[in-house]
Length: 599
Image (cartoon, rainbow, N blue to C red; front, side, top):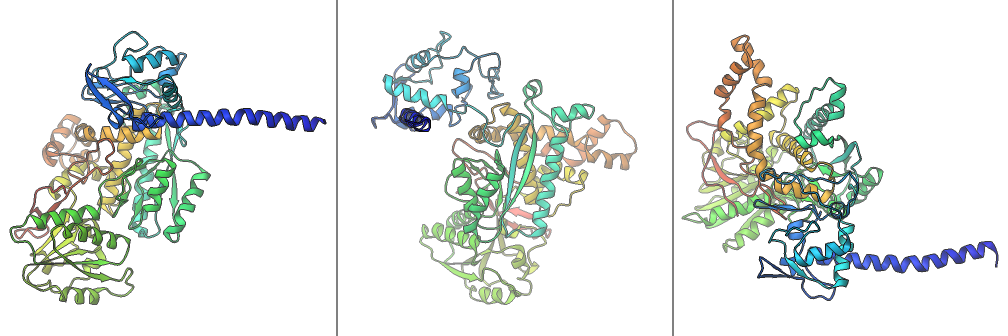
């Protein structure tokens, strides 16, 4: 036998030994995954346990993921901390033990440290509820009935749960990307990128390491733990611009990602189809962080966080509003363009109205009207006149403007999409304002203006033009919330954990952020205006004047939305809308005709 033959035989022998071992390990991890995520044992029987001494739980109710979350980084149940069970937290050794920020509401803010678990000690803890320090774990933790083989599978899964940073995260930098689809108008694209790049530049200009070289000046706050532990990183932003038809976008996204993996997609902009981006993120397990869309993907996803359901939400809100009227309309029309968003809105409205047993008559406009759309709209409106009728117009601003010179349909109450039409007072023709209504998924104008004062002051200081208030304020919120969330994550840069922290933090963030922004506004650009008007003054005098002049104490949030909230598995942060009308006393004022409607 030659040397090369002997070497080949040795490699073959090693492969025969390694491949079955690897296959067995993969099978064990998969069995452990089903136990952890689904509460299903390899036998197909439900996982069983007992909590509080006598309360039995089984199957999905008993699954570890309910409390320890997909990342294994734990959670907070009321005032109870659910400790991390990710690999490093269970088995980590040495002085550099990981630490996690738990919910700030409770006094013990950080995860508790403990000696590294052995597999035997971990198995005993899972079965008895006694940790390896000899202390009883919280009674929420079930005492599980699980045999040795199944326990080995669960431990195998825990060993590979969040063991290292996700792709796109390094020791000193986090890589992000934003996606822009080809249907976006050039001015909105520019407004988006100018806003994002300014925020990224300011963020990187005041990181811990950068600030030290700039005399210690910081332009944003970090948590005390982040400051002490030095976990703050610089950010980089890649622009993933898609071209061509949607069926080609997946290949483009894959190519961008191969060139440089990113930790998350942040913001993002599209006027239509977002499904290829959504599916890419779900399959690659990449968080997408609050893109600005007219029609987000409605199917649930694990990694996609959206502001609202867009026009699909508006369709359901309007249907619920019409259902609650004393005299429901006898006939309902809708006008929409034959494009992705128009069809999606129309189909959702038809489904919602079908539950009321009211048929919707459709007037379909061409997808792209190169010529003046006025005549097409005139013909559409002419069909609608009739007593006790209603019409929903899914029109963008250019189409709404084309209604000038067209008389509103007699006897028909007209409704418009606030998402598509932007709902600005100057968009709608005067002749239509008396009897029209807008489905308005935003905060009412007076409070909205107060909530966005900090945003507008920041835009003014940075000499950025407000081209699209909705879009740019969404970006401003998205990136500032990302800063806060990553600050709380410390060194635990796992994609699942980013989504989980986003779910848990958004509910409590707004109140604290309002107070911070009020303080910051006292020291920002508004102070310069006060000095111009009142002469030189000290900071305290300026602060009192700013609060008095701008009614900052009445602010309720920091976004265009009245309330943002998420729970485990929820993916749409704003869940309702108003029906608003124009004031007859003062043209341009929008007044609520309904309460906040959550369908």
